[in-house]
Length: 199
Ligand SMILES: Cc1cc2nc3c(=O)[nH]c(=O)nc-3n(C[C@H](O)[C@H](O)[C@H](O)COP(=O)(O)O)c2cc1C
Image (cartoon, rainbow, N blue to C red; front, side, top):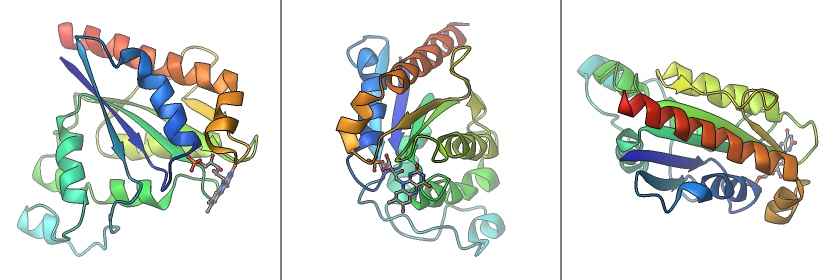
């Protein structure tokens, strides 16, 4: 069974959640794939403050908030579809906090994520509002934790880039090209992951 985890980095239900869910929908009822979601909306995730507790003691993070539970779910997945709104030409602070808190993995089990794969998508209010930068940022965050990156199909480039016009689901649905790119991206991830698992 291949477990695919869709992670939404938006602090609200809107364009990003819509893009993520629509891209994963075709795989929700398949017997060989388990689709799960993780919504950072409403979650308490303090950013890493570099206290070095994990590094010095080789122990999980000392901060007690929602991250511990989220990390447990994260580690059970084989593949990640990570989506963020563009905030100030980058990913959201929620996503940055989330990845900064994965430092204990590096100190406790550095190879833990080496056979996992991920793809990235971003939604921006402007047509060219920094979606490519946000996708690159997500890709870099995944690579920093040892996750392998799957690009989009030829012509789709690194991920999926959506223009929401700041209109949540309605704006997202209007960007048909980006919605298609989201589906193609997840399709490629799943196809390659199934092959990887089989071999
Ligand atoms: C603090 C903040 C910063 C933003 N910065 C950008 C930006 O740099 N570029 C852009 O295109 N849109 C920007 N936006 C708009 C959101 O990226 C856009 O509305 C996005 O689709 C929201 O996703 P959501 O509906 O899933 O929350 C910003 C919105 C907020 C709240």
